[in-house]
Length: 68
Image (cartoon, rainbow, N blue to C red):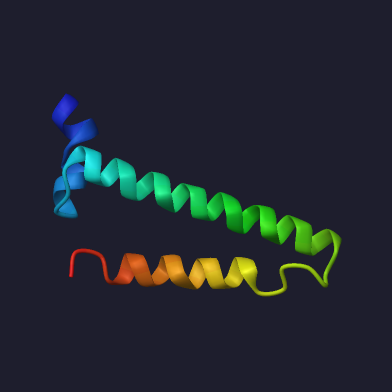
């Protein structure tokens, strides 16, 4: 059970638990930042016009090129 919960997925992407943890946390932080930028942009449209979109594109590149 422990292996399935904590290790199966990291192994599928060729990472250790801690490598996967670090990657996922950096991804979560970037998504949080993108969400905050989008929220500010919704309130004041002249601010952060491309910030959230640029972050999402960068994250997409990381996922697509992962493990290469």
